[in-house]
Image 1: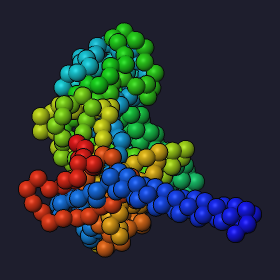
Image 2: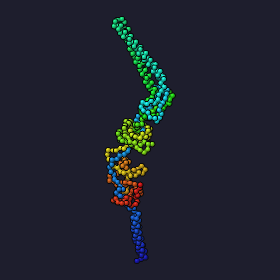
Image 3: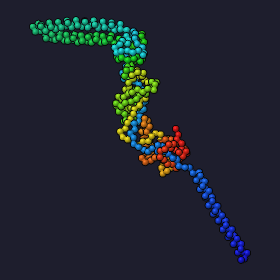
Image 4: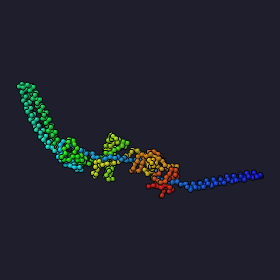
Amino acid sequence: MTRRATWWTIVGVLGLALVIGLSVYSAFRRKAQEESSKKTERPALEFAANDVVQLRPHRLAYQLTLPGTVQAISQTTVRAKVAAELKRVNVREGERVAAGQILAEFDAAQIRAQLAERTGALESARAQLRMTQRTRQTNAQLVKQNFISQNAFDSADSANDAQVAAVAVAQAQLEQTQIMLGDAVVRAPISGVIAKRLVQPGEKVGFDAPLLAIVDLSQLEVQAQAAVADIFRIRTGMPAEVLVEGAGSGKVSGRVERINPSAELGTRTINVYVSIHDEDARLKTGMFARVVLTIAPQSDVPALPVAALRGDEGEQYVWVIAAGKLAKRSITVGARDDRAQLIEIASGLGPDDVVLASKFDNLKDGLAAKVIAAQAGAGATAGVAARSN
């Protein structure tokens, strides 16, 4: 063998050794990576059967909360029916009054003088009527005997008719003055409590000027404002709970009595009137109130416990276990039943989806997960996901 052949033989042997060495190194490295991967691989999260739920039909009852104001069903403003000076005012704010009770009196001296004048005018008109009646009767006999003309009788008859009308006018004027004299004494039109006193004794008051405001607290109602979208769910006769600001934590029972047929201009809300039963007489008109109506639909809807929902930057989602892995599933929600702690799922889930029923920490998309049979201490036994309160 020549020197040149020997050299190429050595080079070939060295190359073969290098190839074999690289192959062995790659095999050892791959095995080491696999072992390292096995060591760092997280075990599957295990959840107990009571840690998961599925979509089920429920008949939800949700609540509408409407802002409103307490007001009296019966309230009035007492106004002056005569133009005169107030002689006295007998009541002040907060005092109870009964229907027909005297509240104030006007100085009626001028009205009494006018009454005397018109009484005299009526008596004079009646005396004149008696005279014209006698004249007419006399002329009726004379015209039959042809002692006077028919024209003379007609004149006497017309004078009598005119005097009858004059008596009626005088009678009406006298009755009007008598009414004015009665109106000089101001009486309560309803029973209630004086809410405002707008005048003082000695003031000269004009006709129809406001004097006093009376509120009957025995019958109260709440005027609440409902959105147009909600008004179709509200019916007269529905029971209601009323929370009144400043009246403590207690609720007042009520009932929807009336619904306004038109929306308010500007706010586009519709007034709903709720009668309330204030047995302790704590409430006052003008108090702010919230009316809570419980709406019960006629059909079942798919729902989940509220605890299963998560929210992140306006997005509603749940965690589901699908194909042995965790998955974050976006959903659309509907009505919420706060009493039963259920919420309607409008879209995003099917009846077969397995959903985590409560909140767990350290959950990520794609983590291995499975549901195990119920047992003591079960529920996220892998220790990676911990239940969050």
